[in-house]
Length: 327
Ligand code: SF4
Image (cartoon, protein in one colour):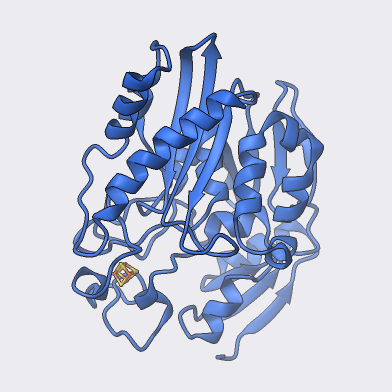
Protein backbone atom coordinates (compact mmCIF):
# COMPACT_ATOMS: atom_id res chain seq x y z
CA UNK A 1 0.00 0.00 0.00
CA UNK A 2 1.25 3.50 -0.79
CA UNK A 3 2.02 5.93 2.03
CA UNK A 4 -0.74 8.36 2.99
CA UNK A 5 -1.39 10.98 5.67
CA UNK A 6 -3.85 10.18 8.43
CA UNK A 7 -6.03 12.85 10.02
CA UNK A 8 -8.50 12.17 12.81
CA UNK A 9 -11.55 14.44 12.68
CA UNK A 10 -12.93 15.42 16.09
CA UNK A 11 -15.57 17.72 14.59
CA UNK A 12 -17.38 17.82 11.26
CA UNK A 13 -15.47 21.01 10.40
CA UNK A 14 -12.18 19.08 10.71
CA UNK A 15 -13.39 16.59 8.11
CA UNK A 16 -14.63 19.33 5.78
CA UNK A 17 -11.30 21.14 6.01
CA UNK A 18 -9.40 17.97 5.15
CA UNK A 19 -11.71 17.15 2.25
CA UNK A 20 -11.37 20.67 0.85
CA UNK A 21 -7.61 20.12 0.48
CA UNK A 22 -8.27 17.51 -2.23
CA UNK A 23 -7.21 13.90 -2.84
CA UNK A 24 -8.64 13.01 0.57
CA UNK A 25 -10.97 10.14 1.35
CA UNK A 26 -13.08 9.52 4.43
CA UNK A 27 -12.26 6.48 6.54
CA UNK A 28 -15.20 4.91 8.37
CA UNK A 29 -15.66 1.12 8.21
CA UNK A 30 -12.97 0.87 5.54
CA UNK A 31 -14.44 -2.36 4.17
CA UNK A 32 -14.13 -1.31 0.53
CA UNK A 33 -11.69 1.60 0.54
CA UNK A 34 -8.83 -0.19 2.31
CA UNK A 35 -9.05 -3.19 -0.03
CA UNK A 36 -8.86 -0.85 -3.01
CA UNK A 37 -5.88 0.98 -1.49
CA UNK A 38 -4.05 -2.30 -0.90
CA UNK A 39 -4.67 -3.19 -4.55
CA UNK A 40 -3.42 0.25 -5.67
CA UNK A 41 -6.79 1.03 -7.24
CA UNK A 42 -7.39 3.96 -4.86
CA UNK A 43 -4.43 6.22 -4.15
CA UNK A 44 -5.53 8.99 -1.77
CA UNK A 45 -2.88 11.29 -0.35
CA UNK A 46 -4.80 11.56 2.91
CA UNK A 47 -7.40 9.65 4.91
CA UNK A 48 -9.59 11.57 7.28
CA UNK A 49 -10.89 9.30 10.03
CA UNK A 50 -14.52 10.28 10.61
CA UNK A 51 -15.41 7.50 13.03
CA UNK A 52 -15.58 9.90 16.00
CA UNK A 53 -18.08 12.28 14.41
CA UNK A 54 -21.63 12.43 15.82
CA UNK A 55 -23.23 10.77 12.79
CA UNK A 56 -24.20 7.37 14.16
CA UNK A 57 -27.80 8.00 15.27
CA UNK A 58 -31.20 7.11 13.85
CA UNK A 59 -33.65 9.90 14.65
CA UNK A 60 -37.38 10.34 14.05
CA UNK A 61 -38.41 13.21 11.79
CA UNK A 62 -41.46 15.45 12.36
CA UNK A 63 -43.13 14.10 9.19
CA UNK A 64 -42.95 10.54 10.51
CA UNK A 65 -39.85 9.57 8.58
CA UNK A 66 -36.37 8.73 9.86
CA UNK A 67 -32.97 10.37 9.58
CA UNK A 68 -30.15 7.81 9.48
CA UNK A 69 -26.66 9.06 10.28
CA UNK A 70 -23.92 8.25 7.78
CA UNK A 71 -21.94 6.29 10.38
CA UNK A 72 -24.74 3.89 11.38
CA UNK A 73 -23.38 0.37 10.83
CA UNK A 74 -25.34 -1.71 8.33
CA UNK A 75 -26.06 -4.36 10.97
CA UNK A 76 -27.48 -1.81 13.45
CA UNK A 77 -29.68 -0.36 10.73
CA UNK A 78 -30.97 -3.78 9.66
CA UNK A 79 -31.80 -4.64 13.28
CA UNK A 80 -33.43 -1.36 14.24
CA UNK A 81 -37.03 -2.03 15.20
CA UNK A 82 -38.31 1.07 13.36
CA UNK A 83 -36.58 -0.04 10.16
CA UNK A 84 -37.83 -3.61 10.42
CA UNK A 85 -41.43 -2.50 11.03
CA UNK A 86 -41.72 0.57 8.80
CA UNK A 87 -39.11 -0.11 6.10
CA UNK A 88 -38.80 -3.92 5.94
CA UNK A 89 -37.58 -3.63 2.34
CA UNK A 90 -34.46 -1.87 3.59
CA UNK A 91 -33.84 -4.42 6.34
CA UNK A 92 -34.14 -7.26 3.79
CA UNK A 93 -31.68 -5.58 1.43
CA UNK A 94 -29.17 -4.93 4.19
CA UNK A 95 -29.08 -8.50 5.46
CA UNK A 96 -28.73 -9.82 1.91
CA UNK A 97 -25.49 -7.86 1.52
CA UNK A 98 -22.00 -9.04 2.51
CA UNK A 99 -21.38 -11.14 5.65
CA UNK A 100 -22.35 -10.42 9.29
CA UNK A 101 -18.76 -9.40 10.04
CA UNK A 102 -18.70 -6.92 7.16
CA UNK A 103 -22.15 -5.57 8.03
CA UNK A 104 -20.89 -4.85 11.55
CA UNK A 105 -18.13 -2.65 10.11
CA UNK A 106 -19.72 -1.17 6.99
CA UNK A 107 -21.55 2.13 7.37
CA UNK A 108 -24.45 3.72 5.56
CA UNK A 109 -22.20 6.42 4.06
CA UNK A 110 -19.64 3.88 2.92
CA UNK A 111 -22.31 1.67 1.42
CA UNK A 112 -23.53 4.61 -0.67
CA UNK A 113 -20.01 5.17 -1.95
CA UNK A 114 -18.82 1.61 -2.51
CA UNK A 115 -17.27 1.02 -5.88
CA UNK A 116 -17.97 -1.47 -8.63
CA UNK A 117 -16.65 -5.02 -8.40
CA UNK A 118 -15.88 -5.11 -12.14
CA UNK A 119 -12.94 -7.54 -12.34
CA UNK A 120 -10.95 -5.20 -14.53
CA UNK A 121 -11.44 -2.24 -12.23
CA UNK A 122 -10.24 -3.97 -9.07
CA UNK A 123 -7.21 -5.60 -10.76
CA UNK A 124 -4.60 -3.06 -11.87
CA UNK A 125 -3.06 -5.79 -14.03
CA UNK A 126 -5.70 -4.82 -16.59
CA UNK A 127 -4.49 -1.61 -18.14
CA UNK A 128 -7.69 -0.57 -19.91
CA UNK A 129 -10.29 0.69 -17.47
CA UNK A 130 -11.82 4.11 -18.02
CA UNK A 131 -13.17 4.19 -14.49
CA UNK A 132 -9.75 3.65 -12.92
CA UNK A 133 -7.70 5.39 -15.62
CA UNK A 134 -9.83 7.77 -17.75
CA UNK A 135 -9.18 7.43 -21.47
CA UNK A 136 -7.55 3.98 -21.22
CA UNK A 137 -10.47 1.98 -22.66
CA UNK A 138 -12.77 -0.67 -21.25
CA UNK A 139 -11.54 -4.27 -21.04
CA UNK A 140 -15.04 -5.50 -20.22
CA UNK A 141 -16.43 -4.64 -23.66
CA UNK A 142 -14.49 -7.49 -25.27
CA UNK A 143 -13.55 -9.60 -22.24
CA UNK A 144 -15.81 -11.83 -20.15
CA UNK A 145 -18.70 -9.62 -19.08
CA UNK A 146 -21.21 -11.94 -17.46
CA UNK A 147 -21.63 -9.70 -14.39
CA UNK A 148 -21.89 -6.42 -16.27
CA UNK A 149 -24.66 -4.00 -17.16
CA UNK A 150 -27.62 -4.50 -19.46
CA UNK A 151 -29.16 -1.05 -18.93
CA UNK A 152 -27.86 2.50 -19.12
CA UNK A 153 -24.26 1.62 -20.00
CA UNK A 154 -22.03 3.49 -22.44
CA UNK A 155 -19.16 2.46 -24.69
CA UNK A 156 -16.84 3.89 -22.01
CA UNK A 157 -18.00 1.65 -19.16
CA UNK A 158 -20.45 -1.20 -18.62
CA UNK A 159 -19.88 -1.70 -14.88
CA UNK A 160 -22.70 -2.18 -12.37
CA UNK A 161 -23.26 -0.58 -9.00
CA UNK A 162 -22.76 -3.22 -6.29
CA UNK A 163 -24.92 -2.08 -3.35
CA UNK A 164 -28.08 -3.81 -2.14
CA UNK A 165 -28.91 -1.08 0.36
CA UNK A 166 -28.99 1.60 -2.33
CA UNK A 167 -31.52 -0.32 -4.42
CA UNK A 168 -33.93 -0.40 -1.47
CA UNK A 169 -33.25 3.26 -0.62
CA UNK A 170 -34.10 4.25 -4.18
CA UNK A 171 -37.42 2.40 -3.93
CA UNK A 172 -38.16 4.16 -0.65
CA UNK A 173 -37.58 7.67 -2.09
CA UNK A 174 -34.66 8.31 0.26
CA UNK A 175 -32.68 11.53 0.21
CA UNK A 176 -28.92 11.82 0.78
CA UNK A 177 -27.76 14.73 2.94
CA UNK A 178 -24.29 16.18 2.40
CA UNK A 179 -22.20 18.93 3.92
CA UNK A 180 -19.25 20.93 2.63
CA UNK A 181 -17.67 24.22 3.65
CA UNK A 182 -19.95 25.78 1.03
CA UNK A 183 -23.12 24.51 2.73
CA UNK A 184 -25.50 21.57 2.92
CA UNK A 185 -27.20 19.74 0.05
CA UNK A 186 -30.04 17.25 -0.20
CA UNK A 187 -29.81 14.88 -3.17
CA UNK A 188 -32.63 12.49 -4.07
CA UNK A 189 -31.39 8.91 -4.01
CA UNK A 190 -32.50 8.50 -7.64
CA UNK A 191 -30.08 11.25 -8.62
CA UNK A 192 -27.17 10.42 -6.30
CA UNK A 193 -25.54 7.71 -8.44
CA UNK A 194 -24.67 8.44 -12.06
CA UNK A 195 -24.77 6.59 -15.35
CA UNK A 196 -21.29 6.22 -16.87
CA UNK A 197 -21.71 8.34 -20.00
CA UNK A 198 -18.33 9.82 -20.95
CA UNK A 199 -17.12 10.17 -17.35
CA UNK A 200 -17.35 6.71 -15.75
CA UNK A 201 -14.68 7.67 -13.20
CA UNK A 202 -17.47 9.54 -11.37
CA UNK A 203 -19.79 7.14 -9.59
CA UNK A 204 -21.94 9.73 -7.82
CA UNK A 205 -22.89 13.39 -7.73
CA UNK A 206 -20.89 13.84 -4.50
CA UNK A 207 -18.20 16.48 -4.89
CA UNK A 208 -14.68 15.80 -3.59
CA UNK A 209 -15.11 18.35 -0.77
CA UNK A 210 -18.47 17.00 0.44
CA UNK A 211 -19.17 14.69 3.34
CA UNK A 212 -22.23 12.43 3.37
CA UNK A 213 -23.86 13.16 6.73
CA UNK A 214 -27.17 11.26 6.62
CA UNK A 215 -29.89 9.58 4.62
CA UNK A 216 -33.51 10.51 5.25
CA UNK A 217 -36.49 8.30 4.64
CA UNK A 218 -39.98 9.79 4.17
CA UNK A 219 -42.97 8.00 5.71
CA UNK A 220 -43.58 4.97 3.52
CA UNK A 221 -46.89 3.60 2.18
CA UNK A 222 -45.04 0.42 1.19
CA UNK A 223 -44.34 -1.20 4.58
CA UNK A 224 -47.01 -3.90 4.26
CA UNK A 225 -46.20 -5.01 0.75
CA UNK A 226 -42.57 -4.98 -0.24
CA UNK A 227 -39.86 -7.46 -1.09
CA UNK A 228 -36.13 -7.35 -1.80
CA UNK A 229 -35.14 -10.28 -3.97
CA UNK A 230 -31.49 -10.94 -4.72
CA UNK A 231 -30.33 -13.47 -7.30
CA UNK A 232 -26.64 -14.41 -7.06
CA UNK A 233 -24.26 -17.24 -7.77
CA UNK A 234 -23.83 -18.25 -4.10
CA UNK A 235 -26.66 -17.70 -1.63
CA UNK A 236 -24.26 -17.30 1.29
CA UNK A 237 -22.14 -14.43 0.01
CA UNK A 238 -22.02 -12.80 -3.41
CA UNK A 239 -22.93 -9.62 -5.20
CA UNK A 240 -26.20 -9.58 -7.11
CA UNK A 241 -26.44 -10.80 -10.65
CA UNK A 242 -29.86 -9.20 -10.51
CA UNK A 243 -31.79 -7.82 -7.57
CA UNK A 244 -35.24 -6.28 -7.29
CA UNK A 245 -36.75 -3.93 -4.75
CA UNK A 246 -40.51 -4.19 -5.24
CA UNK A 247 -42.64 -1.85 -3.15
CA UNK A 248 -46.41 -1.82 -3.50
CA UNK A 249 -49.20 0.30 -2.10
CA UNK A 250 -52.30 -1.86 -2.55
CA UNK A 251 -56.00 -1.12 -2.41
CA UNK A 252 -57.36 -4.64 -2.23
CA UNK A 253 -55.74 -6.36 -5.18
CA UNK A 254 -55.39 -3.10 -7.12
CA UNK A 255 -52.09 -1.25 -7.20
CA UNK A 256 -52.37 2.34 -5.95
CA UNK A 257 -48.66 3.07 -6.25
CA UNK A 258 -45.47 1.12 -6.85
CA UNK A 259 -41.70 1.33 -6.96
CA UNK A 260 -39.68 -1.21 -8.90
CA UNK A 261 -35.91 -0.75 -8.72
CA UNK A 262 -33.32 -3.15 -10.13
CA UNK A 263 -29.82 -3.83 -8.84
CA UNK A 264 -26.93 -5.57 -10.59
CA UNK A 265 -28.00 -4.37 -14.03
CA UNK A 266 -26.74 -0.79 -14.32
CA UNK A 267 -24.19 1.75 -13.09
CA UNK A 268 -26.80 2.93 -10.56
CA UNK A 269 -29.93 1.50 -8.93
CA UNK A 270 -32.23 1.26 -11.95
CA UNK A 271 -35.73 2.55 -11.43
CA UNK A 272 -37.97 0.59 -13.79
CA UNK A 273 -40.60 3.25 -14.37
CA UNK A 274 -42.22 1.35 -17.26
CA UNK A 275 -42.81 -1.57 -14.90
CA UNK A 276 -44.34 0.79 -12.35
CA UNK A 277 -46.66 2.21 -15.03
CA UNK A 278 -47.69 -1.32 -15.96
CA UNK A 279 -48.74 -1.90 -12.35
CA UNK A 280 -50.38 1.31 -11.13
CA UNK A 281 -54.16 1.28 -11.47
CA UNK A 282 -54.30 -2.40 -12.35
CA UNK A 283 -55.34 -5.53 -10.50
CA UNK A 284 -52.40 -7.77 -9.69
CA UNK A 285 -53.35 -10.62 -12.00
CA UNK A 286 -51.09 -12.73 -14.22
CA UNK A 287 -51.43 -10.36 -17.17
CA UNK A 288 -50.37 -7.35 -15.10
CA UNK A 289 -47.45 -9.23 -13.59
CA UNK A 290 -46.29 -10.40 -16.97
CA UNK A 291 -46.55 -6.87 -18.41
CA UNK A 292 -44.58 -5.44 -15.48
CA UNK A 293 -41.86 -8.06 -15.84
CA UNK A 294 -41.45 -7.39 -19.56
CA UNK A 295 -41.52 -3.62 -19.06
CA UNK A 296 -38.80 -3.75 -16.38
CA UNK A 297 -36.09 -4.32 -18.99
CA UNK A 298 -37.31 -1.93 -21.71
CA UNK A 299 -34.24 -0.58 -23.47
CA UNK A 300 -31.95 -3.40 -22.29
CA UNK A 301 -28.77 -3.89 -24.27
CA UNK A 302 -26.95 -7.01 -23.15
CA UNK A 303 -23.34 -7.86 -24.03
CA UNK A 304 -21.92 -11.17 -25.26
CA UNK A 305 -21.95 -12.97 -21.88
CA UNK A 306 -24.92 -11.49 -20.07
CA UNK A 307 -28.07 -11.76 -22.20
CA UNK A 308 -29.35 -14.14 -19.51
CA UNK A 309 -29.74 -11.13 -17.21
CA UNK A 310 -32.65 -9.81 -19.27
CA UNK A 311 -34.78 -12.89 -18.68
CA UNK A 312 -33.51 -13.19 -15.12
CA UNK A 313 -34.49 -9.61 -14.33
CA UNK A 314 -37.95 -10.03 -15.83
CA UNK A 315 -38.60 -13.20 -13.83
CA UNK A 316 -37.16 -11.71 -10.64
CA UNK A 317 -39.46 -8.70 -10.97
CA UNK A 318 -42.53 -10.93 -11.30
CA UNK A 319 -41.48 -13.03 -8.30
CA UNK A 320 -40.62 -10.02 -6.12
CA UNK A 321 -43.99 -8.40 -6.85
CA UNK A 322 -45.84 -11.65 -6.15
CA UNK A 323 -44.02 -12.17 -2.87
CA UNK A 324 -44.34 -8.51 -1.89
CA UNK A 325 -48.09 -8.59 -2.49
CA UNK A 326 -48.43 -11.57 -0.15
CA UNK A 327 -46.40 -10.11 2.76
FE1 SF4 B 1 -13.43 -0.27 -16.16
FE2 SF4 B 1 -16.04 0.16 -16.36
FE3 SF4 B 1 -14.81 -1.16 -18.26
FE4 SF4 B 1 -15.06 -2.27 -15.86
S1 SF4 B 1 -16.70 -1.80 -17.24
S2 SF4 B 1 -13.25 -2.26 -17.21
S3 SF4 B 1 -14.98 -0.47 -14.53
S4 SF4 B 1 -14.43 0.98 -17.68
